[in-house]
Picture: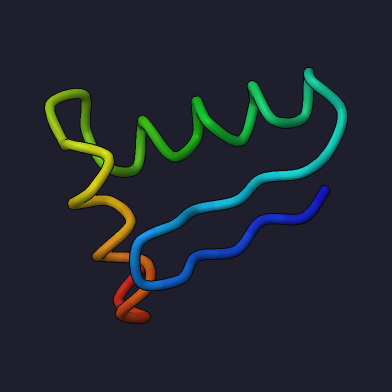
Length: 48
């Protein structure tokens, strides 16, 4: 499973079940109402 963030892109590679789990973890981390672009910006700036 690989994932990385750049200034305007998030990439997740792996088996479908791995990507689903990763996306659900990211959703919990960010909160349900967070927009994807805000989540990418947060992670690409290194603030995690």
